[in-house]
Image 1 (cartoon, rainbow, N blue to C red):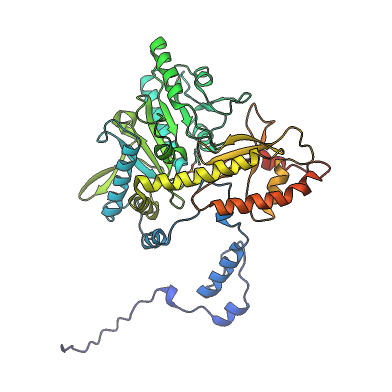
Image 2: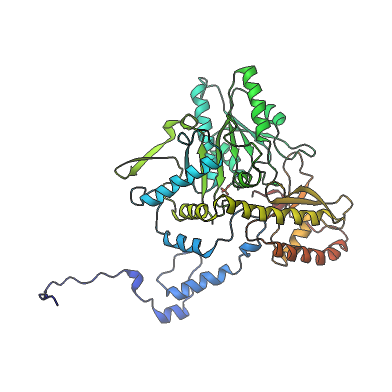
Length: 466
Ligand SMILES: *Cc1c(COP(=O)(O)O)cnc(C)c1O
């Protein structure tokens, strides 16, 4: 045993205030205020119980058929995420392996999306597709500004897209002062097509956004047709208009289930693609990805550099600090599933969607708006002769059984069309789908017996932004 000398140093151990017990009697009797910081601490167990109990009133995430976002991951993914909760994604120098996993994920996606020159592709993780779309939109705007001498004095930038775009594109236009040019829906055309896109393009169009697939009905927009129309336009006018593919959901579905569909970097006009790692990328929120075909598609002046292993790493982001756990979980999921694993998971979701859609189609009460054969998502409306109830009634009644199935109206010019939409995700099994359909079968006689549709919540009907 080693010998130690006594010390007369008066220095005490330091205590983290978290280690101290809160006043136990106060914790039993004092009710903390709701909207003001409590005067003092309470025990961790009491604070936990208060928060936990209040959250019981949230809906069950697994029964939430409104969201595209992942609601189930396996225990190993949870463990990894818990291990990484303390890692800040921006600290590349301090967490070089987390940075390396992000880099590998970008490489995996560039390969999956058929980038012609993987070494030239640039990309980054984001908090979700919204941030990714902001970055992609900024790159489009900057490229346009550089080739437009009239900006900002006389020329005003515009972005062409369908009226069915996700709200993030309207945000992009509002935040960065770009005119949104939204192609309205007409008749059975419920998303952007080549003709309606072209009709809105001019020399101040910074780009066209094509969605794979639409949040309203799960349908894929015809990216290749839109690119071909813009090729012809460029030949005619000399104006180059790049395409951004918003693949928030579909960029993690189509590569596995629709390999013959050409929508990605195989199309030379596709400058950039985004996806939500937390949708069909199968990771808990929030992680997204943005990739650019090459350095030319992402103007250098938008890129900032942070320290990395004694050198510098380029970054492009709106946030500075951001959790690293989701990026690690994305890499884990890529490694865990591989191509065949992803294919099996997405095919299972699509099978659930198409079979459920077919059951709706077989009922006289409903008419399909989409069948779940693109994104594993389908939308149904009531048949024209159904006058006793509407989709809002169905949504409300299903909620009584715990099922969260949104009802909403379509944008211009199909505000007359109100639908129910079901998003089938990993974890929503055929068995759960059967239970939902059984509940619907039990509800329908009561709905049919209503004298008329109940009050439609106007604000809810139009404020749908998933
Ligand atoms: C969900 C979605 C977004 C927004 O993505 P977040 O990851 O939720 O920020 C953008 N575009 C489309 C088509 C979407 O489905």
